[in-house]
View (cartoon, rainbow, N blue to C red):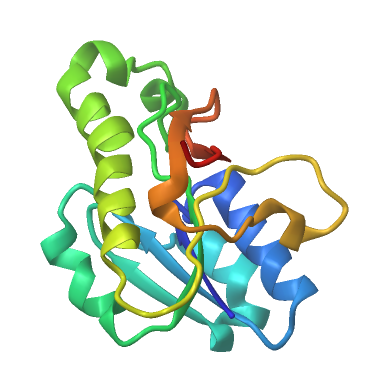
Length: 171
């Protein structure tokens, strides 16, 4: 199986991707993030990098990343790409308020980025289940990823800025 993790150069999603790779040595992770992994992330993933592919692209621009994923057999998706109030870098940068400086970008990434990922998952033509999931407490990483037909799912935003989904019965 191949797990696609959006936002995996951030803290939470990088931990999830790393844990997945450690827990399942025969599986791969594809990272889709607007930022390339920094030096700390490169060191963190170094022992597992042979089973990783990094696609550096903006989640809101599917034309920039769709081709890079076309040949991949993505079986699961964890969407965690988000613009958060916490800035990276120095203490001065951390005091910035991105939501006040550029609220449109936050809506674009946090909402329309989710729409782009959901559209891509829905467009997959392969005859297999696809997934959208949110990180949650679990002793088994695979419990975080629930396979289901994405057309039967309703996506809702969770507090962590990732995408949570629930299966709804057919009407």
